[in-house]
Image 1: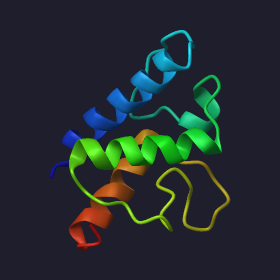
Image 2 (image 1 turned 180 degrees about the vertical axis):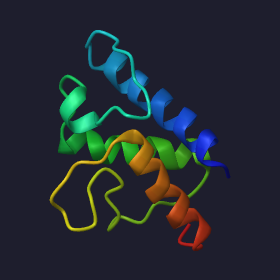
Image 3 (image 1 turned 45 degrees about the horizontal axis):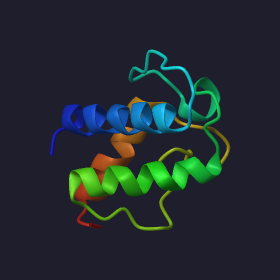
Length: 95
């Protein structure tokens, strides 16, 4: 699975969440940081987004992996950085 494929699916997930939550659509790119750039996006929506992405990619993302938070837990990740985390999980066979 390519990083490009993962990024497209992740952006689709965010667009759907924003639309379903009643927020105005914004331009979402690889440099978007969902937790700081998307209106109304919070830790509960992180969980929903991870589940939606896993379903669309037909992979399992373990519960102990917050793909939107740095490994040290100090910084929210951009979409590009989150894509790298997902690809790492998939490539090491954690699905």
